[in-house]
Image (cartoon, rainbow, N blue to C red):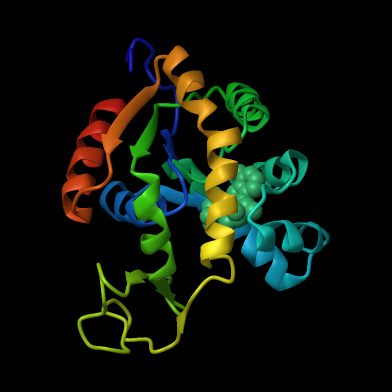
Length: 228
Ligand code: AMP
């Protein structure tokens, strides 16, 4: 990060990393700590599928196969969401951009609003560990809190720590076969963004194989510096 330009408006942070790297978990922690808004294109697409919108209908099979949804659809969904009032607090992009076309579209969109990216943070992990991480994960269907069979079980079995909800969900695409396709898509189409943001002087890298709280501390320090 060169820190040479003062942001003119709300912070924009990007979390990069393969499926299972912990982007969602860390984005939610940053959201709570810094009052930023987590924007997950995966969540937005899953909502579009659940609501049966045109975009959702087009995205459903692609997501189930573990491939990337077309740039046009994803960029349109994100552009729309960025116009919501809460985004003036600043955003953490989780799962977007995933292609160079999306990264360039984001730069254009931000420039139109007099904004820029404060930091693109790559969560670096070993691929081999990702299948275990993903296949054990589930979320509270009421408040969205994330859990894991081995690494982060609810304190009381069957009950959400945060909202005491009892309706837990596992994602349809969190199967071993789909995870392999998602990892391939990451390496082929998303990993090149590490060099893209490095060239912009916006890249930070974090070893994301450790404990969730340690990674959160490191990320918090990066965000504090990047948004100062
Ligand atoms: P995620 O919740 O981020 O793991 O995303 C779940 C699925 O949604 C991905 O495997 C893709 O099929 C799709 N998706 C999410 N974000 C994007 C994006 N930025 N570009 C293309 N496809 C996406």
